[in-house]
Amino acid sequence: MDVDIGNALATVASPGISRDALERLDEDVARAHERIEAGRADAEHGYEALNLPSRTDPDEIYRAVDRPEIADADALVTIGIGGSALGAATIADALSGAGAEVGVGAGSEVGADTADDGTQTVFLDNVDPEWITGHLETLPLENTAINVVSRSGTTAETLANFLVVREAFEDAGVDWTERTIVTTGEAGPLRELSDRHGLPALQVPDGVPGRFSALSPVGLVAAAVCGHDLEALLAGASAEAETLTGSLFECPAYAYGATTHALAARGASVNAMMPYAESLETYAEWFAQLWAESLGKDDLGQTPVRALGATDQHSQLQLYRAGPRNTLVSFVTPRERDDRAIPATDVDDLAYLGDASLGELLQAEFEATEASLAAAGRPNVRIELERVDAFELGGLLYGMEAACVLAGELAGVNAFNQPAVEWAKKATRGLLGGTDADGNRLEEADAVAE
Ligand code: PA5
Image 1 (spheres, helix red, strand yellow):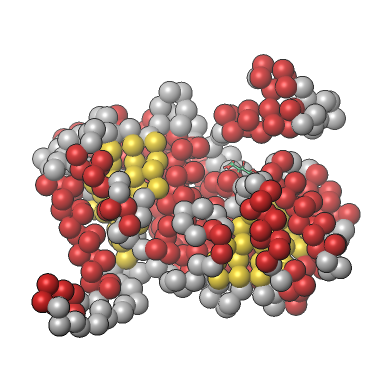
Image 2 (image 1 turned 180 degrees about the vertical axis):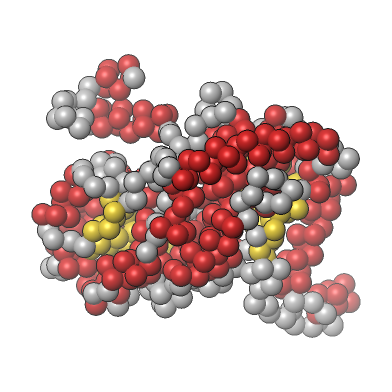
Protein backbone atom coordinates (compact mmCIF):
# COMPACT_ATOMS: atom_id res chain seq x y z
CA MET A 1 0.00 0.00 0.00
CA ASP A 2 1.05 3.60 -0.52
CA VAL A 3 0.23 6.38 1.91
CA ASP A 4 0.06 10.05 0.92
CA ILE A 5 -0.05 12.42 3.90
CA GLY A 6 0.25 15.64 1.87
CA ASN A 7 -3.24 16.80 2.79
CA ALA A 8 -2.50 16.38 6.50
CA LEU A 9 0.31 18.93 6.48
CA ALA A 10 -0.15 22.24 8.28
CA THR A 11 0.34 24.12 5.01
CA VAL A 12 -2.91 22.56 3.76
CA ALA A 13 -4.99 21.63 6.77
CA SER A 14 -6.00 22.60 10.25
CA PRO A 15 -5.43 20.64 12.36
CA GLY A 16 -2.32 19.75 10.42
CA ILE A 17 1.29 18.86 11.13
CA SER A 18 4.26 20.92 10.01
CA ARG A 19 7.25 19.41 8.24
CA ASP A 20 9.46 20.35 11.22
CA ALA A 21 7.15 18.63 13.65
CA LEU A 22 7.12 15.53 11.44
CA GLU A 23 10.89 15.46 11.44
CA ARG A 24 10.97 15.70 15.22
CA LEU A 25 8.30 13.01 15.45
CA ASP A 26 10.43 10.77 13.24
CA GLU A 27 12.94 10.50 16.10
CA ASP A 28 10.17 9.06 18.28
CA VAL A 29 9.18 6.76 15.43
CA ALA A 30 12.74 5.42 15.27
CA ARG A 31 12.70 4.68 19.02
CA ALA A 32 9.24 3.12 18.80
CA HIS A 33 10.42 0.96 15.90
CA GLU A 34 13.26 -0.37 18.03
CA ARG A 35 10.78 -1.37 20.74
CA ILE A 36 8.52 -3.00 18.14
CA GLU A 37 11.40 -4.95 16.62
CA ALA A 38 12.59 -6.08 20.06
CA GLY A 39 9.04 -7.19 20.90
CA ARG A 40 8.81 -9.11 17.63
CA ALA A 41 12.17 -10.76 18.19
CA ASP A 42 11.10 -11.92 21.68
CA ALA A 43 7.60 -12.94 20.45
CA GLU A 44 6.13 -10.67 23.12
CA HIS A 45 2.38 -10.52 23.56
CA GLY A 46 0.91 -8.33 20.83
CA TYR A 47 4.13 -7.67 18.91
CA GLU A 48 4.00 -11.33 17.88
CA ALA A 49 1.04 -10.43 15.64
CA LEU A 50 3.47 -8.62 13.35
CA ASN A 51 5.28 -11.95 12.84
CA LEU A 52 2.18 -13.74 11.53
CA PRO A 53 3.02 -13.45 7.81
CA SER A 54 6.01 -15.74 8.33
CA ARG A 55 4.53 -17.83 11.19
CA THR A 56 1.15 -18.77 9.70
CA ASP A 57 1.21 -22.05 7.80
CA PRO A 58 -1.41 -22.02 5.00
CA ASP A 59 -1.03 -25.77 4.48
CA GLU A 60 -2.09 -26.46 8.06
CA ILE A 61 -5.27 -24.47 7.40
CA TYR A 62 -5.94 -26.09 4.02
CA ARG A 63 -5.48 -29.55 5.63
CA ALA A 64 -7.87 -28.73 8.48
CA VAL A 65 -10.70 -27.73 6.12
CA ASP A 66 -9.99 -30.57 3.71
CA ARG A 67 -13.03 -32.76 4.31
CA PRO A 68 -15.96 -32.80 1.88
CA GLU A 69 -18.57 -31.64 4.43
CA ILE A 70 -16.52 -28.47 4.99
CA ALA A 71 -14.58 -27.80 1.78
CA ASP A 72 -17.51 -28.53 -0.53
CA ALA A 73 -20.20 -26.90 1.60
CA ASP A 74 -22.66 -24.56 -0.13
CA ALA A 75 -22.65 -22.26 2.90
CA LEU A 76 -20.24 -21.50 5.72
CA VAL A 77 -21.44 -20.12 9.04
CA THR A 78 -18.67 -18.42 11.02
CA ILE A 79 -19.52 -17.97 14.69
CA GLY A 80 -17.32 -15.47 16.54
CA ILE A 81 -17.35 -11.85 17.63
CA GLY A 82 -15.00 -8.84 17.59
CA GLY A 83 -11.49 -9.87 16.64
CA SER A 84 -12.72 -13.42 16.13
CA ALA A 85 -15.09 -12.36 13.34
CA LEU A 86 -14.14 -9.07 11.71
CA GLY A 87 -10.86 -10.17 10.09
CA ALA A 88 -12.50 -13.21 8.51
CA ALA A 89 -15.51 -11.14 7.40
CA THR A 90 -13.25 -8.45 5.93
CA ILE A 91 -11.31 -10.99 3.89
CA ALA A 92 -14.48 -12.78 2.76
CA ASP A 93 -16.21 -9.56 1.76
CA ALA A 94 -13.19 -8.00 0.06
CA LEU A 95 -12.37 -11.07 -2.01
CA SER A 96 -15.85 -12.33 -2.77
CA GLY A 97 -16.29 -10.20 -5.86
CA ALA A 98 -18.33 -7.08 -6.41
CA GLY A 99 -22.06 -7.17 -5.90
CA ALA A 100 -22.07 -10.53 -4.15
CA GLU A 101 -23.92 -9.44 -1.06
CA VAL A 102 -26.97 -11.50 -0.23
CA GLY A 103 -29.16 -11.58 2.81
CA VAL A 104 -29.51 -9.57 5.94
CA GLY A 105 -25.94 -8.46 6.37
CA ALA A 106 -25.87 -5.80 3.70
CA GLY A 107 -24.19 -2.60 4.79
CA SER A 108 -21.40 -2.33 7.31
CA GLU A 109 -22.86 -5.06 9.49
CA VAL A 110 -21.31 -8.50 9.70
CA GLY A 111 -23.86 -10.57 7.85
CA ALA A 112 -24.01 -12.68 4.74
CA ASP A 113 -22.07 -12.76 1.50
CA THR A 114 -21.14 -15.07 -1.33
CA ALA A 115 -17.54 -16.18 -1.87
CA ASP A 116 -15.51 -16.50 -5.05
CA ASP A 117 -16.20 -20.22 -5.27
CA GLY A 118 -19.92 -19.66 -4.69
CA THR A 119 -19.91 -20.54 -0.98
CA GLN A 120 -22.44 -18.44 0.88
CA THR A 121 -20.71 -16.97 3.91
CA VAL A 122 -22.63 -15.95 7.01
CA PHE A 123 -21.01 -14.33 10.04
CA LEU A 124 -22.94 -14.69 13.26
CA ASP A 125 -21.55 -12.31 15.85
CA ASN A 126 -24.56 -10.74 17.50
CA VAL A 127 -27.01 -12.70 19.65
CA ASP A 128 -30.14 -11.00 18.41
CA PRO A 129 -32.58 -13.95 18.38
CA GLU A 130 -34.64 -12.72 15.42
CA TRP A 131 -31.53 -12.24 13.30
CA ILE A 132 -30.11 -15.67 14.23
CA THR A 133 -33.46 -17.39 13.62
CA GLY A 134 -33.76 -15.64 10.24
CA HIS A 135 -30.42 -17.12 9.17
CA LEU A 136 -31.13 -20.59 10.50
CA GLU A 137 -34.45 -20.69 8.66
CA THR A 138 -32.89 -19.84 5.31
CA LEU A 139 -29.56 -21.70 5.41
CA PRO A 140 -29.31 -25.07 3.61
CA LEU A 141 -28.20 -26.84 6.83
CA GLU A 142 -27.50 -30.21 5.16
CA ASN A 143 -24.89 -28.43 3.01
CA THR A 144 -23.62 -25.91 5.54
CA ALA A 145 -20.28 -25.98 7.40
CA ILE A 146 -19.68 -24.36 10.79
CA ASN A 147 -16.57 -22.38 11.70
CA VAL A 148 -16.43 -21.51 15.42
CA VAL A 149 -13.79 -19.02 16.53
CA SER A 150 -13.00 -17.86 20.05
CA ARG A 151 -9.54 -17.23 21.39
CA SER A 152 -10.63 -17.49 25.02
CA GLY A 153 -13.24 -20.15 24.31
CA THR A 154 -15.46 -18.48 26.89
CA THR A 155 -17.14 -15.57 25.07
CA ALA A 156 -20.86 -15.76 25.88
CA GLU A 157 -22.14 -14.60 22.48
CA THR A 158 -20.02 -17.09 20.55
CA LEU A 159 -20.69 -20.07 22.79
CA ALA A 160 -24.42 -19.33 22.95
CA ASN A 161 -24.69 -18.98 19.18
CA PHE A 162 -22.75 -22.21 18.71
CA LEU A 163 -25.14 -24.08 21.03
CA VAL A 164 -28.14 -22.62 19.17
CA VAL A 165 -26.72 -23.45 15.73
CA ARG A 166 -25.77 -26.98 16.87
CA GLU A 167 -29.30 -27.59 18.08
CA ALA A 168 -30.75 -26.37 14.77
CA PHE A 169 -28.57 -28.90 12.93
CA GLU A 170 -29.67 -31.68 15.31
CA ASP A 171 -33.33 -30.73 14.85
CA ALA A 172 -32.84 -30.93 11.09
CA GLY A 173 -31.23 -34.39 11.45
CA VAL A 174 -27.84 -33.12 10.21
CA ASP A 175 -24.64 -34.35 11.92
CA TRP A 176 -22.92 -31.09 12.89
CA THR A 177 -19.82 -32.88 14.21
CA GLU A 178 -18.65 -33.84 10.74
CA ARG A 179 -19.03 -30.30 9.36
CA THR A 180 -17.64 -28.16 12.20
CA ILE A 181 -14.15 -26.70 12.53
CA VAL A 182 -12.97 -24.84 15.62
CA THR A 183 -10.24 -22.24 16.16
CA THR A 184 -9.48 -21.52 19.80
CA GLY A 185 -6.80 -21.28 22.47
CA GLU A 186 -4.89 -24.18 23.97
CA ALA A 187 -7.45 -24.67 26.75
CA GLY A 188 -10.93 -23.53 27.70
CA PRO A 189 -14.53 -24.65 27.24
CA LEU A 190 -14.47 -24.49 23.44
CA ARG A 191 -11.30 -26.59 23.32
CA GLU A 192 -12.96 -29.06 25.70
CA LEU A 193 -16.02 -29.24 23.45
CA SER A 194 -13.98 -29.79 20.32
CA ASP A 195 -11.92 -32.54 22.02
CA ARG A 196 -15.08 -34.23 23.25
CA HIS A 197 -16.55 -34.40 19.75
CA GLY A 198 -13.27 -34.99 17.91
CA LEU A 199 -13.64 -31.82 15.83
CA PRO A 200 -10.73 -30.51 13.77
CA ALA A 201 -9.30 -27.67 15.85
CA LEU A 202 -6.73 -25.05 15.00
CA GLN A 203 -5.00 -22.94 17.60
CA VAL A 204 -5.05 -19.17 17.95
CA PRO A 205 -1.31 -18.42 18.05
CA ASP A 206 0.10 -17.39 21.43
CA GLY A 207 0.76 -13.69 21.82
CA VAL A 208 -1.75 -12.57 19.18
CA PRO A 209 -4.68 -10.47 20.48
CA GLY A 210 -8.04 -11.00 18.77
CA ARG A 211 -8.14 -7.86 16.64
CA PHE A 212 -4.59 -8.50 15.40
CA SER A 213 -5.33 -12.11 14.37
CA ALA A 214 -6.79 -11.72 10.85
CA LEU A 215 -3.67 -13.26 9.30
CA SER A 216 -3.82 -16.38 11.51
CA PRO A 217 -6.33 -19.28 11.36
CA VAL A 218 -8.79 -16.90 13.05
CA GLY A 219 -9.19 -14.96 9.80
CA LEU A 220 -7.98 -17.52 7.31
CA VAL A 221 -10.13 -20.63 7.89
CA ALA A 222 -13.18 -18.98 6.32
CA ALA A 223 -10.99 -17.69 3.48
CA ALA A 224 -9.65 -21.21 2.84
CA VAL A 225 -13.15 -22.73 2.76
CA CYS A 226 -14.18 -20.04 0.26
CA GLY A 227 -11.24 -20.84 -2.01
CA HIS A 228 -9.28 -17.64 -1.47
CA ASP A 229 -5.53 -17.56 -1.91
CA LEU A 230 -3.97 -17.68 1.56
CA GLU A 231 -0.43 -17.61 0.18
CA ALA A 232 -1.17 -14.36 -1.66
CA LEU A 233 -2.71 -12.77 1.46
CA LEU A 234 0.36 -13.70 3.50
CA ALA A 235 2.78 -12.67 0.73
CA GLY A 236 1.15 -9.23 0.62
CA ALA A 237 1.49 -8.95 4.38
CA SER A 238 5.14 -10.07 4.20
CA ALA A 239 5.86 -7.43 1.56
CA GLU A 240 4.36 -4.78 3.87
CA ALA A 241 6.42 -6.15 6.79
CA GLU A 242 9.54 -5.57 4.70
CA THR A 243 8.77 -1.84 4.65
CA LEU A 244 8.91 -1.52 8.46
CA THR A 245 12.03 0.59 8.76
CA GLY A 246 12.64 3.12 11.46
CA SER A 247 11.34 6.19 9.58
CA LEU A 248 7.88 7.46 8.78
CA PHE A 249 9.34 8.95 5.60
CA GLU A 250 10.19 5.45 4.33
CA CYS A 251 7.45 3.25 5.74
CA PRO A 252 3.80 3.73 4.63
CA ALA A 253 2.38 2.04 7.73
CA TYR A 254 4.42 4.25 10.05
CA ALA A 255 3.54 7.34 7.98
CA TYR A 256 -0.12 6.58 8.64
CA GLY A 257 0.35 5.69 12.34
CA ALA A 258 2.53 8.73 13.06
CA THR A 259 0.27 11.14 11.16
CA THR A 260 -2.88 9.96 12.92
CA HIS A 261 -1.07 10.24 16.26
CA ALA A 262 0.14 13.77 15.50
CA LEU A 263 -3.27 14.90 14.28
CA ALA A 264 -5.04 13.37 17.29
CA ALA A 265 -2.70 15.37 19.53
CA ARG A 266 -3.67 18.50 17.57
CA GLY A 267 -7.42 17.98 17.88
CA ALA A 268 -8.40 15.39 15.26
CA SER A 269 -10.25 13.23 17.75
CA VAL A 270 -12.24 11.49 14.98
CA ASN A 271 -10.83 9.27 12.23
CA ALA A 272 -13.32 8.56 9.42
CA MET A 273 -12.15 5.53 7.45
CA MET A 274 -13.65 5.88 3.98
CA PRO A 275 -12.79 3.23 1.39
CA TYR A 276 -13.82 3.88 -2.20
CA ALA A 277 -14.66 0.22 -2.90
CA GLU A 278 -17.86 -1.48 -1.87
CA SER A 279 -15.87 -4.66 -1.18
CA LEU A 280 -13.92 -2.82 1.55
CA GLU A 281 -16.95 -1.76 3.56
CA THR A 282 -16.34 -4.47 6.16
CA TYR A 283 -12.66 -3.47 6.23
CA ALA A 284 -13.78 -0.10 7.65
CA GLU A 285 -15.58 -2.01 10.39
CA TRP A 286 -12.45 -4.08 11.09
CA PHE A 287 -10.39 -0.88 11.20
CA ALA A 288 -12.84 0.72 13.62
CA GLN A 289 -12.39 -2.16 16.05
CA LEU A 290 -8.60 -2.15 15.68
CA TRP A 291 -8.36 1.58 16.30
CA ALA A 292 -10.94 1.86 19.10
CA GLU A 293 -10.06 -1.23 21.13
CA SER A 294 -6.30 -0.81 20.79
CA LEU A 295 -5.89 2.93 21.29
CA GLY A 296 -8.87 3.96 23.42
CA LYS A 297 -7.13 3.99 26.80
CA ASP A 298 -5.97 6.30 29.57
CA ASP A 299 -8.40 9.01 28.40
CA LEU A 300 -6.67 8.97 24.99
CA GLY A 301 -7.69 7.63 21.59
CA GLN A 302 -9.28 8.65 18.34
CA THR A 303 -12.90 7.76 17.61
CA PRO A 304 -13.06 5.71 14.41
CA VAL A 305 -16.03 6.23 12.11
CA ARG A 306 -17.01 3.84 9.34
CA ALA A 307 -17.73 5.58 6.05
CA LEU A 308 -18.02 4.42 2.45
CA GLY A 309 -17.31 6.31 -0.74
CA ALA A 310 -19.26 7.37 -2.70
CA THR A 311 -22.29 6.56 -0.50
CA ASP A 312 -21.28 8.75 2.43
CA GLN A 313 -20.49 11.72 0.23
CA HIS A 314 -24.25 12.10 0.37
CA SER A 315 -24.41 12.09 4.16
CA GLN A 316 -21.30 12.39 6.35
CA LEU A 317 -19.21 14.55 4.01
CA GLN A 318 -21.16 17.70 4.92
CA LEU A 319 -19.97 17.30 8.52
CA TYR A 320 -16.36 16.56 7.62
CA ARG A 321 -16.06 19.61 5.35
CA ALA A 322 -18.02 22.14 7.38
CA GLY A 323 -18.49 20.76 10.90
CA PRO A 324 -16.07 20.89 13.83
CA ARG A 325 -12.37 20.77 12.91
CA ASN A 326 -11.92 17.48 14.74
CA THR A 327 -11.86 14.89 11.94
CA LEU A 328 -9.20 13.18 9.87
CA VAL A 329 -10.66 11.46 6.79
CA SER A 330 -8.69 8.36 5.76
CA PHE A 331 -9.37 7.32 2.17
CA VAL A 332 -8.56 3.88 0.81
CA THR A 333 -8.73 3.63 -2.94
CA PRO A 334 -7.62 1.05 -5.51
CA ARG A 335 -5.77 2.28 -8.61
CA GLU A 336 -7.42 -0.37 -10.77
CA ARG A 337 -10.75 -2.15 -10.68
CA ASP A 338 -12.94 -4.17 -13.01
CA ASP A 339 -15.02 -1.57 -14.77
CA ARG A 340 -18.35 -1.16 -16.46
CA ALA A 341 -19.28 1.42 -19.09
CA ILE A 342 -22.16 3.81 -18.53
CA PRO A 343 -24.53 3.57 -21.52
CA ALA A 344 -24.85 6.71 -23.65
CA THR A 345 -28.07 8.71 -23.57
CA ASP A 346 -29.45 11.48 -25.78
CA VAL A 347 -30.55 13.54 -22.76
CA ASP A 348 -28.26 16.56 -23.11
CA ASP A 349 -27.56 17.12 -19.44
CA LEU A 350 -26.53 13.48 -19.01
CA ALA A 351 -24.31 13.25 -22.09
CA TYR A 352 -21.14 13.56 -19.99
CA LEU A 353 -21.97 10.25 -18.30
CA GLY A 354 -22.10 8.37 -21.58
CA ASP A 355 -18.41 9.06 -22.15
CA ALA A 356 -17.47 7.57 -18.80
CA SER A 357 -17.55 4.28 -16.90
CA LEU A 358 -18.75 3.58 -13.37
CA GLY A 359 -15.11 3.17 -12.32
CA GLU A 360 -14.20 6.56 -13.77
CA LEU A 361 -17.20 8.11 -12.04
CA LEU A 362 -16.19 6.58 -8.70
CA GLN A 363 -12.61 7.79 -9.18
CA ALA A 364 -13.90 11.29 -9.98
CA GLU A 365 -16.09 11.17 -6.86
CA PHE A 366 -13.03 10.26 -4.80
CA GLU A 367 -10.78 12.93 -6.29
CA ALA A 368 -13.50 15.56 -5.92
CA THR A 369 -14.08 14.66 -2.28
CA GLU A 370 -10.37 14.65 -1.49
CA ALA A 371 -9.93 18.03 -3.20
CA SER A 372 -12.99 19.51 -1.54
CA LEU A 373 -11.69 18.58 1.92
CA ALA A 374 -8.24 19.96 1.11
CA ALA A 375 -9.79 23.18 -0.23
CA ALA A 376 -11.63 23.56 3.07
CA GLY A 377 -8.40 22.92 5.01
CA ARG A 378 -9.63 19.61 6.43
CA PRO A 379 -6.95 16.94 6.98
CA ASN A 380 -7.15 13.78 4.92
CA VAL A 381 -4.82 10.92 4.07
CA ARG A 382 -4.87 8.76 0.94
CA ILE A 383 -4.08 5.04 1.24
CA GLU A 384 -3.70 3.53 -2.23
CA LEU A 385 -3.82 -0.12 -3.27
CA GLU A 386 -3.02 -1.45 -6.74
CA ARG A 387 -6.40 -3.17 -6.70
CA VAL A 388 -8.52 -5.09 -4.19
CA ASP A 389 -7.01 -8.58 -4.37
CA ALA A 390 -5.56 -11.04 -1.88
CA PHE A 391 -2.01 -9.68 -2.05
CA GLU A 392 -3.01 -6.05 -1.61
CA LEU A 393 -5.53 -6.87 1.11
CA GLY A 394 -2.87 -8.77 3.09
CA GLY A 395 -0.68 -5.68 2.84
CA LEU A 396 -3.49 -3.36 3.91
CA LEU A 397 -4.43 -5.43 6.98
CA TYR A 398 -0.81 -5.80 8.04
CA GLY A 399 -0.04 -2.15 7.35
CA MET A 400 -2.93 -0.91 9.45
CA GLU A 401 -1.97 -3.25 12.31
CA ALA A 402 1.61 -1.94 12.21
CA ALA A 403 0.27 1.65 12.09
CA CYS A 404 -1.86 0.93 15.12
CA VAL A 405 1.03 -0.61 17.07
CA LEU A 406 3.17 2.44 16.26
CA ALA A 407 0.38 4.85 17.28
CA GLY A 408 0.10 2.97 20.58
CA GLU A 409 3.86 3.29 21.17
CA LEU A 410 3.81 7.01 20.36
CA ALA A 411 0.85 7.61 22.67
CA GLY A 412 2.37 5.47 25.43
CA VAL A 413 -0.64 3.15 25.64
CA ASN A 414 -0.74 -0.64 25.58
CA ALA A 415 -2.39 -1.40 22.24
CA PHE A 416 -2.70 -5.08 23.06
CA ASN A 417 -5.07 -5.23 26.01
CA GLN A 418 -8.79 -4.43 26.27
CA PRO A 419 -9.72 -4.08 29.95
CA ALA A 420 -13.03 -2.33 29.23
CA VAL A 421 -14.12 -5.12 26.88
CA GLU A 422 -13.09 -7.78 29.41
CA TRP A 423 -14.99 -5.93 32.14
CA ALA A 424 -18.21 -6.08 30.12
CA LYS A 425 -17.67 -9.76 29.25
CA LYS A 426 -17.25 -10.62 32.90
CA ALA A 427 -20.26 -8.53 33.92
CA THR A 428 -22.40 -10.32 31.33
CA ARG A 429 -21.37 -13.74 32.62
CA GLY A 430 -21.96 -12.54 36.18
CA LEU A 431 -25.47 -11.31 35.37
CA LEU A 432 -26.30 -14.74 33.96
CA GLY A 433 -24.85 -16.52 37.00
CA GLY A 434 -21.66 -17.75 35.30
CA THR A 435 -18.39 -18.80 36.96
CA ASP A 436 -14.77 -17.70 36.61
CA ALA A 437 -11.90 -19.91 35.41
CA ASP A 438 -11.63 -21.49 38.88
CA GLY A 439 -15.32 -22.38 38.97
CA ASN A 440 -16.24 -19.58 41.40
CA ARG A 441 -19.61 -18.08 40.80
CA LEU A 442 -19.38 -14.59 39.28
CA GLU A 443 -21.71 -12.19 40.99
CA GLU A 444 -22.67 -8.94 39.29
CA ALA A 445 -21.01 -7.14 42.21
CA ASP A 446 -17.66 -8.91 41.50
CA ALA A 447 -17.69 -7.72 37.94
CA VAL A 448 -18.60 -4.21 38.89
CA ALA A 449 -15.88 -4.11 41.57
CA GLU A 450 -13.10 -4.88 39.07
O1 PA5 B 1 -9.73 -7.99 20.08
C1 PA5 B 1 -10.18 -8.60 21.04
O2 PA5 B 1 -9.46 -9.04 21.94
C2 PA5 B 1 -11.68 -8.82 21.20
O3 PA5 B 1 -12.40 -8.12 20.24
C3 PA5 B 1 -11.99 -10.32 21.06
O4 PA5 B 1 -11.57 -10.76 19.79
C4 PA5 B 1 -13.47 -10.60 21.24
O5 PA5 B 1 -13.90 -10.12 22.49
C5 PA5 B 1 -13.76 -12.09 21.14
O6 PA5 B 1 -12.99 -12.80 22.07
P1 PA5 B 1 -12.76 -14.35 21.94
O7 PA5 B 1 -11.98 -14.60 20.71
O8 PA5 B 1 -12.04 -14.73 23.17
O9 PA5 B 1 -14.11 -14.99 21.85
